[in-house]
Length: 356
Image (cartoon, rainbow, N blue to C red; front, side, top):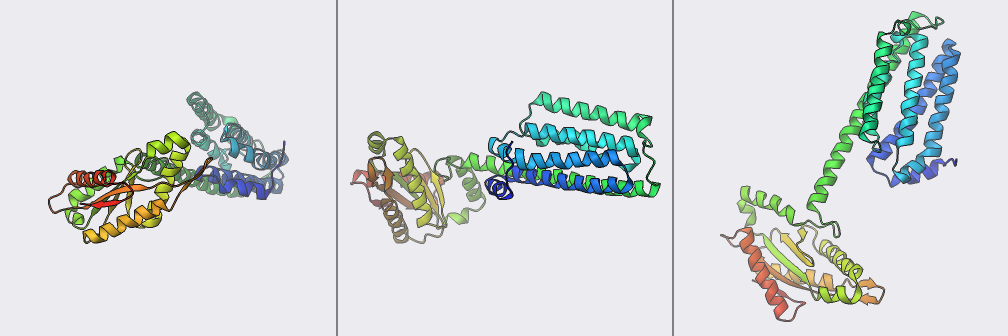
């Protein structure tokens, strides 16, 4: 078993998403809380629970420093999940046995009903097994007379109430923390799904599905179309590039094109419209001359970004058709006109701009 240092753990966490970062810090927090419990049990003279918490602190140390980095790398958190589940279960059953339900340690057992859902690697039967078992233990503790008053009588009632207040505070904090973790993880998942739905995975540009959002906007804000323009761009001889240099070089050309578009224009809605076809939607284009200037800048930007292939540096170019929305245009009417302009650009020699 190899123990990682703080710097190695910190470096690994930099590359992780919200779930893994917060989960890791939660394990550290759990170790610190058990350190606090160790002091409390030592102060009241409850030696068995003091020794138990020495073991708990050691366990969380092993989880963080020995199992942490391998778990982050493998994304398999089942072992840590079982260790934490078992530790929480054993610790709080034992603490309740010694100090009774009034001390409030039984509260932590309720966390075990929801905690399995925060471990991503479990199967559904395991979720069910853990929830049922935790629920059974809770019922036993809440109903069995042997857990009512506790077997340890070395602490006054006032001390027991103070311990309960501490446990209620820690329990509520943990509950809020888990709720925050759940809602934040859900929000990130929704954002990722939305990004995957509307983004092309290769270039990061929008895909055709995103046009539904634009059409909805234009339906309710038709005045925004007055100075809107479309630029339709096609990479020249892309099939030949794929056939001669391989699909990896073709993919690199598509990614370079996306970079060129984003560098040349900061305020633009850019789509990967088809295989090697790109669509740009521009606002505030007052006339055709401005549109032509923008399109020429894009054409030059693409031509200035050759790709590196095993065969060497490969230049490539693009043909562009552009148009502005007319007063009675729909999106598809303007798109058809841009497509005609693109066809004319390719027919008259490629690597050029035609504005209609």
